[in-house]
Length: 120
View 1 (cartoon, rainbow, N blue to C red):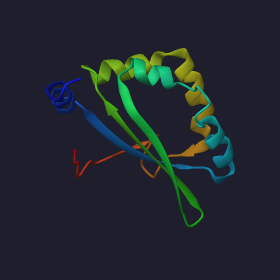
View 2: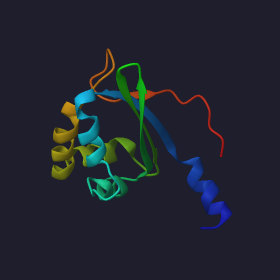
View 3: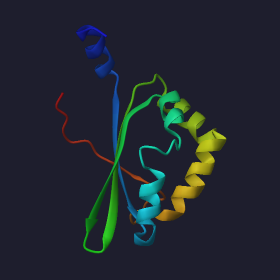
């Protein structure tokens, strides 16, 4: 891709940061599920235009927090998210992972964070 194509793509990228707690008793199992060798739903993330999907783990006191980040490069975020949500393998993946997590107060799942800075 040439520089003009790269710049055009970046104008249409939706950057999403999110945060959730993880139950301490599930940290090792969660890490194992997300190990590089585990296929999980990686191909589905690509299919629905989610790129640079990353999850970070940080411990504060006795609480573990996950920070997730991805870039959406498709044309219809809502349609793609509905498509991903309907994929049977994604449903099974979330049924496995969701009980390991604790949403922040007032949230029902990952809390979407406000982007306050970006530098390309």
